[in-house]
Image (cartoon, rainbow over all chains, first blue to last red):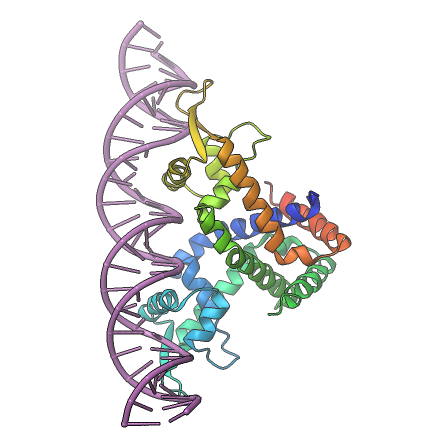
Amino acid sequence: MTNQALEQVVRASHEVFMLTSDRIAKALEELRLTHATAQALWAIDPEESAPSMRVLAGRLFCNAPNLSFVVNQLTDRGYVERAVDPGDRRSRVVVLTERGRRVRERVIDVTLAETPFAGCGPEDLSRLAEILQRVLSSTGR
Amino acid sequence: MTNQALEQVVRASHEVFMLTSDRIAKALEELRLTHATAQALWAIDPEESAPSMRVLAGRLFCNAPNLSFVVNQLTDRGYVERAVDPGDRRSRVVVLTERGRRVRERVIDVTLAETPFAGCGPEDLSRLAEILQRVLSSTGR
DNA sequence: TCCATTTACTTCGAGTCTCAAAGCAAAAGC
DNA sequence: GCTTTTGCTTTGAGACTCGAAGTAAATGGA
């Protein structure tokens, strides 16, 4: 039972991901970001309440020591700050600085400009969005 | 001009990628592979002629020293072997061993079993495949 | 033919990424 | 109170990635 279409989809979406990473690498370097730090920055939505280390690690599928390292990198560059969660003094929430907000915006802009998906028409995009949303919601996240 | 759907698609496909990586991590470890080595192994199709280091680096969007390192890892585990290209003695082609073929097959099986795309129906899959193929072909690869 | 240039790859050094183990402090549960 | 659990950090080690430099083979003239 070879699932030809499934393998093609997995391969192609991986290819899109790698292509995008490759295309934005130069711009990230100018922002003094790596893929890991850029991804972490993206995962902190300034519209929502600041995530704790634990929550952020969950979003990034990484463990606590790894996230500590990445957040240190972002802190060194002045893009985020740690703050103690008043509700639980063990927990540290990660807050974007003003500069961090601007850089995050720039990361998103560059990515959306460089992703091969940018060449899609509106109907393809909404179809993709609909299917992907369905796929993710079925995973229980 | 905020492209809401585009951002959603980029986010969601990235999420699918990370989720898949996370899910297959344990199985890869049992195969003595990391993401980098598994990806390289996958990129060597035994049905096609063995790729040179240069060609393989292109497929993986990495540079020559990096690929040398990764191929060394695969060689250490007995999954691939280097061979001199008779047509150009500067060039080394990377050939799967018998064990490498079996392990590669296993990597693909595990990935296709764990990817959230596996939950898609045939019509979603073929639609995804069609759109992704179109997206990639428009990038000139 | 000879030699400079280019190409394919490897080695080396340095910085980044990732995780398990161990440690610390605050919270939770007796 | 005291133990356990939880959230995070530090440390140590291995893996990843890249630029710079080096080697060997091919190429392209003179």
